[in-house]
Length: 355
Ligand code: DGT
Ligand code: CA
Image (cartoon, rainbow, N blue to C red; front, side, top):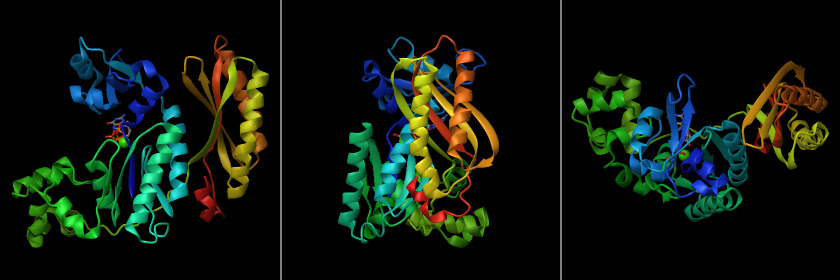
């Protein structure tokens, strides 16, 4: 299964500010050099209809948006990561193995959970959609097939909120009319070379003489390309080690009272401790995440010698919190979080899934 959240950052921005819900939204990475230098990170479907797309310079996007009510916002990675972590946990519960490939995409192996039954696999996919929708108010697109490559092609096929099932016997008819540029993993340069050979579609590619392809691309790549055109992919779903573990919570009210914020940190650290113990994991870097009443996120970190002691998280977070208020004495906090990173799982490979 390949699961991909629909217009992820833009959807999250819509959810936390209903006033902008029905408008075109553009989420940007501002480089800071001039007011509008930087690039569009993503846009919602309304903004895409105007032609504003990921990767586009902000200046161009603003030119397109001129005279229209288009909302431009900066990225808020902490917030997106927090939601992403929760969604990955939802998927972990439904899969034998999960391979997270980006902040909003994962491959799930459900061979055992489905008992190799397609109907059961569809049930699992629907259950994932339903949970992400009810718990996070987000829609996802899912592709289900017998390998990763076709599952990825299938999840892209009907967006947003799609569910596309491609059984083995349907793989060739599903793929054959795709332009080669649309095959996952085939980039612009390869597309150009293929087009120069007269190869436009997956069908053309699948029937092209392999020796000729090898002359152009070398043995390995020629084989890979032809396999893609036929929907062959033997790569397994591989779990990735977690790089960090965090807990974030909302304060009872917006506050600058260090003691009540610290109480929350202690509460979060208890939850974190259980995970750390269960997985026998050590860490080196401790971070404090602060989200103020204007929803601005800041992260402060400190790296120490390797430890498993959660008390270190508590004491260093307190220090970082004091430092935060020294620098931001006028601010109140709405949410606070703690994070450990630089993890080492040396003796606990199997239980990683519990994160
Ligand atoms: P989708 O999946 O087509 O409905 O739309 P998105 O927005 O979820 O796009 P996707 O899955 O390709 O990427 C996930 C997030 O990654 C997206 O919300 C923002 C970020 N992202 C995607 N493309 C770019 C890019 O070119 N630059 C930057 N900075 N961020 C990007
Ligand atoms: Ca996405």
